[in-house]
Image 1 (tube, helix red, strand yellow):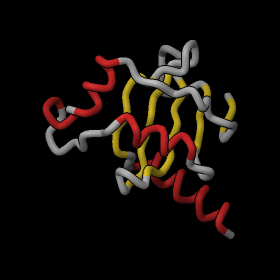
Image 2: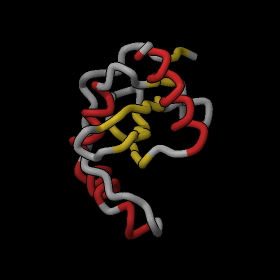
Image 3: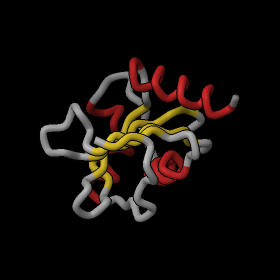
Image 4: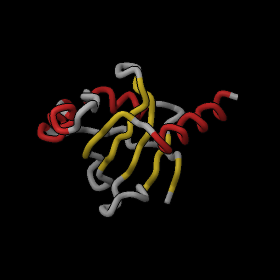
Length: 109
């Protein structure tokens, strides 16, 4: 398991998965709808956290946590390591948000 290595710069979204994250609020009450462009900003965040593989994934996906200026908040992005495609994304909260903020605070010092 690697943490905080360089994220794949070729992160991309197919039409179906992009539509899914754009319309998260229709499936999940109070969820934020996510624009695919925001996930690219999160992937480019120098303070991002990358878990490869994601310890919560049965499919060995990559979990990337980073800030998106377009969204105005921290995003969690799940990526397929085989082709760097986006699988899903959401507004980060809980332990992942705390981990990101702690890492960012350490990097800012």
